[in-house]
Image 1 (spheres, rainbow, N blue to C red):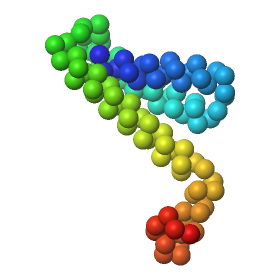
Image 2 (spheres, rainbow, N blue to C red; image 1 turned 180 degrees about the vertical axis):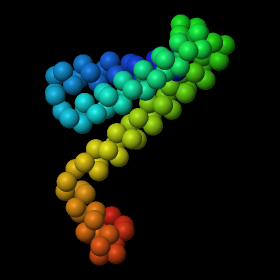
Image 3 (cartoon, rainbow, N blue to C red; image 1 turned 60 degrees about the vertical axis):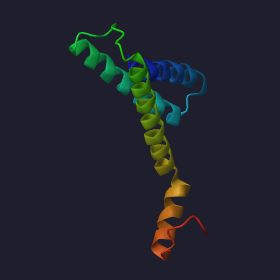
Image 4 (cartoon, rainbow, N blue to C red; image 1 turned 135 degrees about the vertical axis):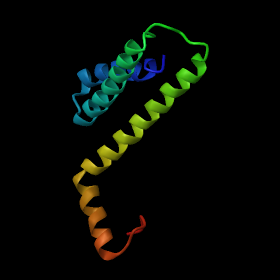
Amino acid sequence: MCYTIPLAGAITTSLLWKKKKSPRLWWLCLLFSGASLFGVVDHLWHGELLLISENWVKDLGLGAVITLAIFVSWGALARLSHPASRSEGWERLERGKVSDEK
């Protein structure tokens, strides 16, 4: 059951990507697809793909945590990939300023 939320995210982002063709949206789609594929394989391995367990609330909660982790990872990747933010961050580190103040 925990794979259903990332699977919904994968379907949603793939539909959005078809309209916008953004590389960052493609990354998000790949992260969601990988997480949902992992969940499906794991549930197939244990023979519980379509099984709704007694703790379905915990399963959905786990899916929400996985989805949150995907968004955090995607945000970090998007931030690191932006050339301006990368160079600005390195310049601040070289000057010894770690905070967001300029």
